[in-house]
Length: 334
Image 1 (tube, rainbow, N blue to C red):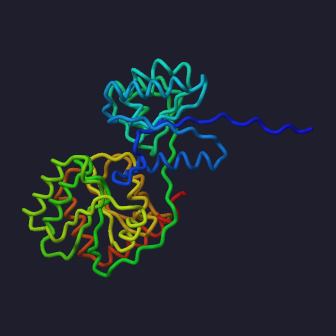
Image 2: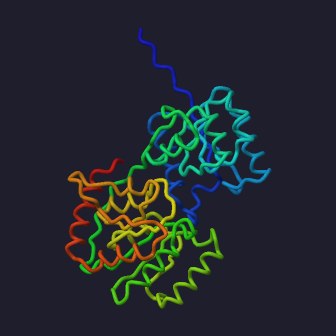
Image 3: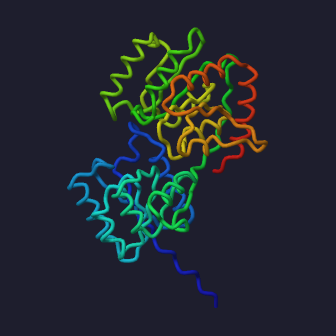
Protein backbone atom coordinates (compact mmCIF):
# COMPACT_ATOMS: atom_id res chain seq x y z
CA UNK A 1 0.00 0.00 0.00
CA UNK A 2 1.32 3.42 -0.96
CA UNK A 3 1.08 5.88 1.85
CA UNK A 4 0.01 9.43 1.00
CA UNK A 5 2.76 12.01 1.29
CA UNK A 6 2.99 13.73 4.62
CA UNK A 7 1.53 17.25 4.51
CA UNK A 8 4.11 19.96 4.31
CA UNK A 9 4.23 22.26 7.33
CA UNK A 10 2.40 25.58 7.14
CA UNK A 11 4.17 28.84 6.43
CA UNK A 12 3.61 31.81 8.72
CA UNK A 13 3.87 35.12 6.84
CA UNK A 14 4.37 38.30 8.88
CA UNK A 15 3.50 41.55 7.09
CA UNK A 16 2.91 45.16 8.13
CA UNK A 17 -0.71 45.98 8.78
CA UNK A 18 -2.39 47.66 5.82
CA UNK A 19 -0.67 45.94 2.90
CA UNK A 20 -4.03 45.83 1.10
CA UNK A 21 -4.85 49.49 1.74
CA UNK A 22 -5.82 50.88 -1.70
CA UNK A 23 -4.79 54.37 -0.58
CA UNK A 24 -1.16 53.30 -0.27
CA UNK A 25 -0.30 50.77 -2.94
CA UNK A 26 3.34 49.81 -3.38
CA UNK A 27 5.35 47.25 -5.23
CA UNK A 28 6.37 45.65 -1.94
CA UNK A 29 2.76 45.25 -0.87
CA UNK A 30 1.78 43.71 -4.20
CA UNK A 31 4.77 41.36 -3.94
CA UNK A 32 3.81 40.27 -0.41
CA UNK A 33 0.23 39.62 -1.43
CA UNK A 34 1.27 37.53 -4.43
CA UNK A 35 3.75 35.53 -2.35
CA UNK A 36 0.87 34.48 -0.09
CA UNK A 37 -1.43 33.71 -3.02
CA UNK A 38 1.16 31.67 -4.89
CA UNK A 39 2.17 29.66 -1.82
CA UNK A 40 -1.48 28.74 -1.39
CA UNK A 41 -1.71 27.85 -5.09
CA UNK A 42 1.25 25.50 -4.58
CA UNK A 43 -0.71 23.69 -1.91
CA UNK A 44 0.89 25.23 1.16
CA UNK A 45 -1.13 26.26 4.18
CA UNK A 46 -0.37 29.91 4.93
CA UNK A 47 -1.12 31.75 8.15
CA UNK A 48 -0.87 35.49 7.58
CA UNK A 49 -0.11 37.80 10.50
CA UNK A 50 -0.56 41.56 9.96
CA UNK A 51 1.33 43.49 12.63
CA UNK A 52 0.20 47.02 13.52
CA UNK A 53 2.74 49.81 13.82
CA UNK A 54 4.61 52.50 11.97
CA UNK A 55 6.94 50.17 10.07
CA UNK A 56 9.85 50.53 9.39
CA UNK A 57 9.98 52.86 12.42
CA UNK A 58 8.30 50.78 15.14
CA UNK A 59 7.60 52.02 18.63
CA UNK A 60 7.50 49.81 21.72
CA UNK A 61 3.88 48.88 21.10
CA UNK A 62 4.67 47.68 17.57
CA UNK A 63 7.64 45.61 18.75
CA UNK A 64 5.51 44.12 21.52
CA UNK A 65 2.82 43.21 18.95
CA UNK A 66 5.44 41.49 16.79
CA UNK A 67 6.74 39.57 19.80
CA UNK A 68 3.23 38.34 20.64
CA UNK A 69 2.72 37.11 17.06
CA UNK A 70 5.99 35.17 17.03
CA UNK A 71 5.52 33.73 20.50
CA UNK A 72 2.22 32.21 19.37
CA UNK A 73 3.91 30.37 16.48
CA UNK A 74 4.90 26.77 17.23
CA UNK A 75 8.52 25.71 17.57
CA UNK A 76 10.30 24.94 14.31
CA UNK A 77 7.76 26.73 12.12
CA UNK A 78 8.80 28.49 8.94
CA UNK A 79 8.17 32.23 9.42
CA UNK A 80 8.55 34.54 6.43
CA UNK A 81 8.90 38.14 7.67
CA UNK A 82 8.56 41.19 5.43
CA UNK A 83 11.67 43.36 5.52
CA UNK A 84 9.82 46.47 6.70
CA UNK A 85 9.01 44.52 9.86
CA UNK A 86 12.21 42.49 10.09
CA UNK A 87 14.99 45.01 9.47
CA UNK A 88 14.29 47.32 12.45
CA UNK A 89 13.43 44.50 14.88
CA UNK A 90 16.54 42.55 15.96
CA UNK A 91 15.49 42.91 19.59
CA UNK A 92 12.48 40.71 18.79
CA UNK A 93 13.71 38.44 16.00
CA UNK A 94 17.24 37.50 17.05
CA UNK A 95 16.27 35.90 20.40
CA UNK A 96 13.62 33.82 18.61
CA UNK A 97 15.77 32.74 15.67
CA UNK A 98 16.84 29.54 17.39
CA UNK A 99 13.25 28.42 17.96
CA UNK A 100 11.82 29.41 14.57
CA UNK A 101 12.98 28.98 10.97
CA UNK A 102 13.09 32.67 10.10
CA UNK A 103 13.16 33.79 6.47
CA UNK A 104 13.46 37.52 5.75
CA UNK A 105 11.81 38.89 2.61
CA UNK A 106 14.08 41.87 2.05
CA UNK A 107 12.64 44.18 -0.60
CA UNK A 108 15.19 46.99 -0.11
CA UNK A 109 18.36 46.27 1.88
CA UNK A 110 19.12 49.21 4.17
CA UNK A 111 22.60 48.12 5.19
CA UNK A 112 22.43 49.22 8.83
CA UNK A 113 23.51 47.36 11.98
CA UNK A 114 19.99 46.35 13.02
CA UNK A 115 19.32 44.75 9.64
CA UNK A 116 22.71 43.01 9.75
CA UNK A 117 21.83 41.42 13.07
CA UNK A 118 18.50 40.17 11.72
CA UNK A 119 19.73 38.68 8.43
CA UNK A 120 22.73 37.11 10.17
CA UNK A 121 20.37 35.29 12.52
CA UNK A 122 17.85 34.28 9.84
CA UNK A 123 17.84 30.87 8.21
CA UNK A 124 17.47 32.44 4.77
CA UNK A 125 16.92 35.75 2.99
CA UNK A 126 14.79 36.33 -0.11
CA UNK A 127 15.41 39.35 -2.35
CA UNK A 128 13.62 40.57 -5.51
CA UNK A 129 16.76 41.13 -7.60
CA UNK A 130 20.35 40.02 -8.12
CA UNK A 131 21.45 43.53 -7.14
CA UNK A 132 19.72 43.21 -3.76
CA UNK A 133 21.25 39.77 -3.26
CA UNK A 134 24.76 41.09 -3.89
CA UNK A 135 24.13 43.94 -1.48
CA UNK A 136 23.05 41.58 1.31
CA UNK A 137 26.04 39.30 0.75
CA UNK A 138 28.58 42.12 0.53
CA UNK A 139 27.27 44.46 3.21
CA UNK A 140 26.16 41.94 5.79
CA UNK A 141 28.47 39.00 5.10
CA UNK A 142 25.57 36.56 4.75
CA UNK A 143 26.66 33.37 2.95
CA UNK A 144 25.66 33.55 -0.72
CA UNK A 145 23.88 30.20 -0.47
CA UNK A 146 21.48 31.60 2.14
CA UNK A 147 20.27 34.49 -0.04
CA UNK A 148 17.76 33.66 -2.78
CA UNK A 149 16.35 35.78 -5.62
CA UNK A 150 12.62 35.65 -6.37
CA UNK A 151 12.17 38.12 -9.23
CA UNK A 152 8.72 39.76 -9.34
CA UNK A 153 6.77 38.43 -12.27
CA UNK A 154 4.18 40.20 -14.35
CA UNK A 155 0.66 39.35 -15.43
CA UNK A 156 -0.13 39.37 -19.14
CA UNK A 157 -1.58 42.72 -20.20
CA UNK A 158 -2.91 44.20 -23.44
CA UNK A 159 -0.33 46.16 -25.40
CA UNK A 160 -0.45 49.96 -25.17
CA UNK A 161 -1.37 51.56 -28.46
CA UNK A 162 0.99 54.52 -28.22
CA UNK A 163 0.54 57.90 -29.81
CA UNK A 164 2.48 59.17 -32.79
CA UNK A 165 4.09 62.05 -30.86
CA UNK A 166 4.95 59.97 -27.79
CA UNK A 167 4.08 62.75 -25.35
CA UNK A 168 1.88 60.83 -22.90
CA UNK A 169 4.27 60.25 -20.00
CA UNK A 170 3.55 58.23 -16.86
CA UNK A 171 5.35 57.96 -13.52
CA UNK A 172 4.08 55.33 -11.05
CA UNK A 173 5.49 55.79 -7.54
CA UNK A 174 4.54 57.10 -4.14
CA UNK A 175 5.38 60.80 -4.04
CA UNK A 176 8.29 60.70 -1.59
CA UNK A 177 11.88 61.99 -1.91
CA UNK A 178 13.38 58.55 -2.66
CA UNK A 179 11.37 58.36 -5.87
CA UNK A 180 12.96 61.54 -7.26
CA UNK A 181 9.86 63.43 -8.36
CA UNK A 182 11.72 66.69 -7.77
CA UNK A 183 14.35 65.61 -10.31
CA UNK A 184 11.61 64.64 -12.74
CA UNK A 185 9.81 67.99 -12.40
CA UNK A 186 13.04 69.90 -12.98
CA UNK A 187 13.81 67.75 -16.03
CA UNK A 188 10.33 68.31 -17.45
CA UNK A 189 10.77 72.04 -17.01
CA UNK A 190 13.80 71.89 -19.32
CA UNK A 191 11.93 70.39 -22.27
CA UNK A 192 10.99 73.74 -23.77
CA UNK A 193 8.19 73.68 -26.32
CA UNK A 194 7.99 69.90 -26.58
CA UNK A 195 4.43 68.60 -26.46
CA UNK A 196 3.95 66.27 -23.52
CA UNK A 197 1.83 65.59 -20.46
CA UNK A 198 2.98 63.64 -17.41
CA UNK A 199 0.74 61.81 -14.93
CA UNK A 200 2.19 61.18 -11.46
CA UNK A 201 0.34 58.17 -10.08
CA UNK A 202 0.99 57.38 -6.42
CA UNK A 203 0.17 58.16 -2.81
CA UNK A 204 0.50 61.83 -1.88
CA UNK A 205 -0.07 61.52 1.88
CA UNK A 206 3.16 59.84 2.97
CA UNK A 207 5.22 63.06 3.06
CA UNK A 208 2.79 66.01 2.85
CA UNK A 209 5.52 68.64 3.24
CA UNK A 210 7.46 67.22 0.29
CA UNK A 211 4.31 67.03 -1.85
CA UNK A 212 3.38 70.63 -1.04
CA UNK A 213 6.89 71.79 -1.94
CA UNK A 214 6.77 69.77 -5.14
CA UNK A 215 3.43 71.29 -6.17
CA UNK A 216 4.98 74.73 -5.64
CA UNK A 217 7.87 73.75 -7.92
CA UNK A 218 5.41 72.60 -10.58
CA UNK A 219 3.55 75.92 -10.50
CA UNK A 220 6.75 77.96 -10.48
CA UNK A 221 7.93 76.12 -13.60
CA UNK A 222 4.66 76.87 -15.38
CA UNK A 223 3.80 73.16 -15.60
CA UNK A 224 0.50 73.23 -13.72
CA UNK A 225 -1.55 72.05 -16.68
CA UNK A 226 0.95 69.43 -17.80
CA UNK A 227 2.07 67.66 -14.60
CA UNK A 228 -0.94 65.91 -13.05
CA UNK A 229 -1.00 64.45 -9.53
CA UNK A 230 -3.62 61.69 -9.69
CA UNK A 231 -3.05 60.09 -6.28
CA UNK A 232 -3.13 56.29 -6.10
CA UNK A 233 -5.26 54.38 -8.59
CA UNK A 234 -6.82 50.93 -8.45
CA UNK A 235 -4.92 48.35 -10.47
CA UNK A 236 -7.74 48.30 -13.02
CA UNK A 237 -7.72 52.07 -13.41
CA UNK A 238 -3.90 52.15 -13.52
CA UNK A 239 -4.01 49.56 -16.30
CA UNK A 240 -6.32 51.81 -18.30
CA UNK A 241 -4.03 54.82 -17.79
CA UNK A 242 -0.94 52.77 -18.74
CA UNK A 243 -2.63 51.48 -21.88
CA UNK A 244 -3.17 55.08 -22.96
CA UNK A 245 0.43 56.13 -22.21
CA UNK A 246 3.55 56.25 -24.37
CA UNK A 247 6.43 56.12 -21.92
CA UNK A 248 6.99 55.26 -18.25
CA UNK A 249 9.50 57.45 -16.43
CA UNK A 250 11.16 56.84 -13.09
CA UNK A 251 13.67 59.15 -11.43
CA UNK A 252 14.18 57.00 -8.33
CA UNK A 253 17.20 57.61 -6.14
CA UNK A 254 17.13 54.00 -4.95
CA UNK A 255 15.18 50.99 -6.12
CA UNK A 256 15.61 47.31 -5.36
CA UNK A 257 13.94 46.13 -8.58
CA UNK A 258 11.24 48.32 -10.10
CA UNK A 259 7.91 46.54 -10.54
CA UNK A 260 6.36 49.58 -12.25
CA UNK A 261 9.03 49.26 -14.94
CA UNK A 262 8.36 45.55 -15.46
CA UNK A 263 4.61 46.15 -15.64
CA UNK A 264 5.20 48.88 -18.23
CA UNK A 265 7.27 46.53 -20.36
CA UNK A 266 4.51 43.91 -20.09
CA UNK A 267 2.36 46.39 -22.04
CA UNK A 268 5.08 47.14 -24.57
CA UNK A 269 5.75 50.54 -22.99
CA UNK A 270 9.36 51.74 -23.16
CA UNK A 271 10.92 53.34 -20.09
CA UNK A 272 13.34 56.08 -19.15
CA UNK A 273 14.79 55.10 -15.78
CA UNK A 274 17.66 55.93 -13.48
CA UNK A 275 20.65 53.62 -13.54
CA UNK A 276 20.43 52.71 -9.87
CA UNK A 277 19.94 49.58 -7.75
CA UNK A 278 17.92 46.86 -9.45
CA UNK A 279 16.33 49.10 -12.10
CA UNK A 280 18.76 48.03 -14.86
CA UNK A 281 17.70 44.43 -14.16
CA UNK A 282 14.03 45.32 -14.48
CA UNK A 283 14.66 47.19 -17.73
CA UNK A 284 16.80 44.35 -19.02
CA UNK A 285 17.16 43.53 -22.69
CA UNK A 286 15.00 42.02 -25.39
CA UNK A 287 16.09 38.57 -26.62
CA UNK A 288 18.02 40.23 -29.47
CA UNK A 289 20.03 42.32 -27.01
CA UNK A 290 18.23 45.61 -27.65
CA UNK A 291 17.36 47.72 -24.60
CA UNK A 292 13.69 48.69 -24.21
CA UNK A 293 14.43 52.12 -22.81
CA UNK A 294 17.04 54.61 -21.72
CA UNK A 295 19.04 54.58 -18.48
CA UNK A 296 20.24 57.88 -17.00
CA UNK A 297 22.25 58.73 -13.88
CA UNK A 298 20.25 59.37 -10.69
CA UNK A 299 19.90 62.87 -9.24
CA UNK A 300 20.76 64.41 -12.62
CA UNK A 301 17.90 66.54 -14.04
CA UNK A 302 19.93 67.45 -17.09
CA UNK A 303 20.58 63.82 -18.04
CA UNK A 304 16.93 62.94 -17.48
CA UNK A 305 15.81 65.92 -19.58
CA UNK A 306 18.19 64.83 -22.35
CA UNK A 307 16.74 61.33 -22.30
CA UNK A 308 13.18 62.61 -22.47
CA UNK A 309 14.10 65.07 -25.23
CA UNK A 310 15.61 62.23 -27.27
CA UNK A 311 12.41 60.22 -26.87
CA UNK A 312 10.15 63.13 -27.82
CA UNK A 313 12.29 64.35 -30.70
CA UNK A 314 13.24 61.15 -32.51
CA UNK A 315 10.44 59.09 -34.09
CA UNK A 316 12.92 56.43 -35.16
CA UNK A 317 14.12 55.99 -31.57
CA UNK A 318 10.53 55.71 -30.37
CA UNK A 319 9.85 52.96 -32.89
CA UNK A 320 13.00 51.04 -31.90
CA UNK A 321 12.32 51.27 -28.19
CA UNK A 322 8.69 50.22 -28.65
CA UNK A 323 9.73 47.13 -30.59
CA UNK A 324 12.31 46.26 -27.93
CA UNK A 325 9.76 46.83 -25.15
CA UNK A 326 7.28 44.46 -26.77
CA UNK A 327 9.93 41.75 -27.12
CA UNK A 328 11.18 42.31 -23.57
CA UNK A 329 7.65 42.14 -22.23
CA UNK A 330 7.13 38.77 -23.89
CA UNK A 331 10.33 37.53 -22.24
CA UNK A 332 9.39 38.49 -18.65
CA UNK A 333 8.35 35.74 -16.25
CA UNK A 334 4.95 35.36 -14.63
